[in-house]
Length: 246
View 1 (cartoon, rainbow, N blue to C red):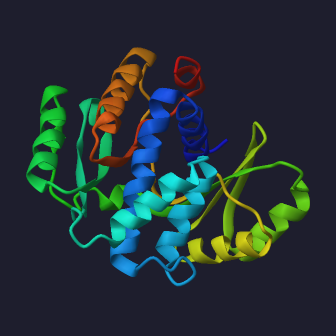
View 2: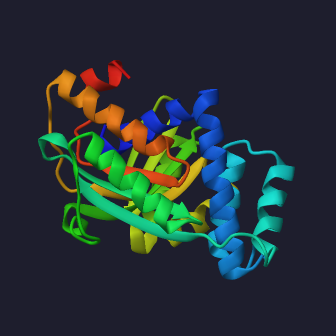
């Protein structure tokens, strides 16, 4: 299984825990709110909102929670969120990109910098790590009653670069350019992904001993626990040994 497929599996398992579920809901609510503020509340006419709603359904978010997020986006007096990206290095040369959605830039910058400093990392300049990661579309889809061969052929025709079936879930990887065509094909097939998003996939990863890798993952968890953080991407190799200990 490819590295990003492993990470998608880990995120799915972590998301099943109640403690992480509220964080997932918080992230999706922000996605919905920002999508409405940017493109309005017409789901059919707003691709970003349609994607956010799809992810909300995949996470089993209650309909009234989705509607409150939409209403918040329509409210001109509600806080305006901005999307920010922070890049830097942790110990052992592990590159990290932290994506945030915030209504208080000063607070977010301060918090992210503090985490890097606390764990002997270095916050770099925006764009300094872009050469290390590729932007990829990653889809997580329950297998259910889908015919494996037929489904994979449909996805390949729509632009899938890689398809992995693990623990009754497909993880589909596509280029950023083909993200929309995969989403459209899934809609045509009436298939609801559990999650669909653009991720930053590292071109190369770094293998560390188990103790060092666990320390890095603890830092990743600290980043993810911050209310302003939406996604964290890194270059640590997710070895089978590390996964077993998570």
